[in-house]
Length: 133
Length: 80
Image (cartoon, rainbow over all chains, first blue to last red; front, side, top):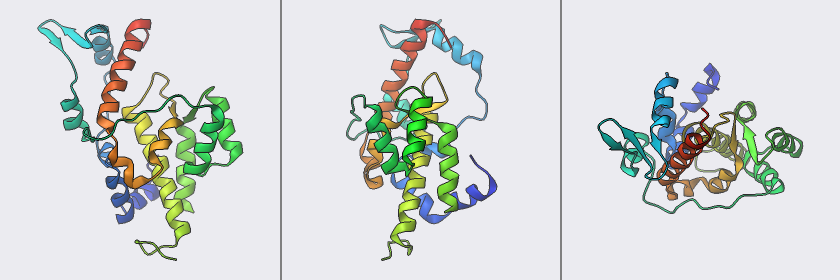
């Protein structure tokens, strides 16, 4: 997603203001370049559903809301996200309104992912289109 | 008619769409991921209706709840 031209636009003031105004801007600076698959699998094996904790040799350990706030810098003290599932028609409508997709494209995404989803490859493509325009 | 950044409303609209697309991408790839790792639920677009109000939602809490749920899912069906 990040070629030279895109990075240049993303450095622009309007982009930074807009992104950080949403409270999710920190996410773009918070990522791992290397993800250890083995380590993640080991943690998953030690996860206990009943107590929502990792069972480790020295006791139980879990991820807390404070950890999320400190590591990802996401807002934690506002309204909760609450939504039910949506129909495919509603999904197409949302994509048309907020992403500016054409009806054909939106229908294709919904069909390809067999649900109300949208592929990352498609998002990358339309993102570059918008920036060019 | 010009907006606060001195661009036409049409350009502003396109910019907002780009921000929207990028946010959906970020949310899908970083905090509300699922096993498929290829697609993101478009229902989150609802919260991007007004970009100024996005910060009014508790994304941290949603992330944690989602993490617990997905961990339960993968732990139960024993697949990675």
